[in-house]
Structure formats: structure tokens, C-alpha cells
Length: 178
Image 1: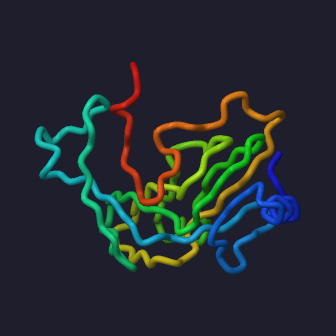
Image 2: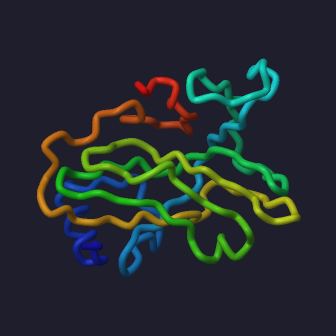
């Protein structure tokens, strides 16, 4: 079941759900808007020596901290939300791009479901599908978190390799077992 604004406010009021800072007018009828942070990662082509990304090798990234950044056409960048979130056990969430942003040709993803028990800033994958550059400004509402109630609390809430992330975090797929 997707949570309504009323239920989201209840969970925030009793500190079961943490979203800090909460952007102005951020609570929507069935989601919470999140704003773009100031930390970005791009794949460093100079440090990934063989020129091929692999599941088995750590990917090297270039870290950028800026209040705004230009995303060239047909290019990809990792970014972070300003908000630190904590999803309580018994709930899960997913990230969606805002439709106004998608209509500009900016695709916004999150690497997957936000599991019950996750806490940290959300790393976003941004892709400019447009033929023109897009200027990204920190503090701008960019995505929304939709929270769902699970049928019961998890036996093992999330405590994985991205737990507690504060800045944009690159892929850690190389840590996975086959």
C-alpha cells in the first residue's frame, strides 16, 4: 500500500520516518519531494585503464562538489539528494523523477528499491536524453520518494554496502558474490 500525505506526516511526527531537511512544500498527496544536493560523480575514463566497465573491478569516479553543474547531452552522472532519509522497518520506498523534470529529457533513477531499514542520502542516476545541455542546480526539487507499507516488518532490515551513505556513491557491484 502506498502511503498518503496524512500517513507520511504521522510517521514524520513520531520520528519513525526521518527525512532531513524536509523541503518546503515537499509532502505531496502520495510522495515526498527531494532536492538535488551538491555532490556529483562522473566515471573517470582516465583511471579506468582498460576502457571497459566490469562487474568484477572497482569503478573509479571523479568527485565534484558544486552548487550547479551542466549535464551535457546524452551523458550520465551520479548525484545525491540533500535529504538524509531513514526508512523504518515495515516500510519500503522507491524514487521517481518528477514529471516536470522528465519532460525536459532528464531521466532520474535510483539504483533500486529503497529497502526497509535503509538510511542515508539517496544516490540518483541522472541521464540527459536531450540534445541540449541541462543545468542542474542544488536545492531544486528533482525527484520524489514514494513510501509503501509492507505486509509485515522485515526479518533482516537493510544493512548493506550503501547503508549510511552521505555523498553520491558509485557502484559497488564488484563486492557482490557471483
